Image (spheres, rainbow, N blue to C red):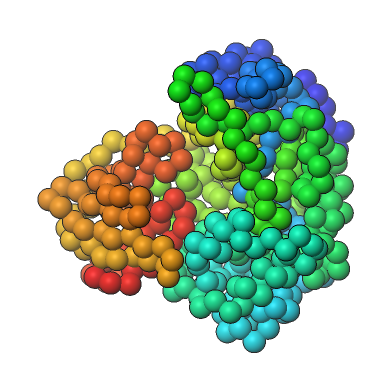
Length: 443
């Protein structure tokens, strides 16, 4: 047991440290990941356990000092800084995006959309594969990298999707943090989050990584194969810069449990439920419906690494699980469920992967072309399933309900696709591939 000095209270965990270690070891073995770490925070007391190796090349064990990439949980951290800046009067969540991103002044969507809209993934900004995943295409090698990225967004046509997850939007959030604080994004994060939360073991690129940084792994022929880490300063606010320990992640969670001003991040916003990912999106956190009470948090998907952080405000508690493997979500999800049930009596909804024939009714209403200018998917209807065609080939999609279709039950990250924005005739206007929305442009 480790007491976090910045938090309060006494231990009240029902799950002992030994129980947690045994659970973690069981799931590491079952899912054949090199290693993982799990932590529970309850009434100010953190229990952190480790299992396995940090790097298959060296055999170095995972310890409490091991740093994992936190990926898209960085988005939740950026939202936290924005809300803290708003609480201190340095901006307002309902300010126009263009008011704080000079590169976007005069751009129609940015004059209309607010900072709150960016945090809610509802800004209507341009969606392009090059802006979302072009990690090697926007590097300038200097402190103006986010300004240059924003300038690229400024000359790109917006996309007609009411809600979509977006890396580009969070890069713009990072740019807002820069213009409001007057320092580069990385320095602002240290000053306005890492320092106040006591997250002294969190490292932030472009600083050199510590000796405790774990290696990510992908499944190989009989053994896990190390992969190169994702490095892209332009996408830092979206999740390519931060690496942290389990204990520091619990310190971040503790900040949210202790600061009432941050509760605004847990307020529901208009959003779809994305099968296998969340039941609703708030302002930098996702909401997960559980039996009896909601849970908040977010997940990380990086090359060779996965992580999940969950907040339970009514229990003054949080849980974090991190694994150094592409198959990490297959470990994180059931382990998280067991921890929640054993420690707090909370039953998370199980992931539904059993097809329900006929549940989507007339499949022809889903047929059409869904696309960005540089990404395209064609959906056609067969007798009992959909066929989803993309540059990756054709996939059969079986209905799970009226919105979600099973594509690959063996894929722990993206087993299904989800449709949304249905019109009066029941025809969807968007398909969500993982979390990104592609608008219907034909059919």
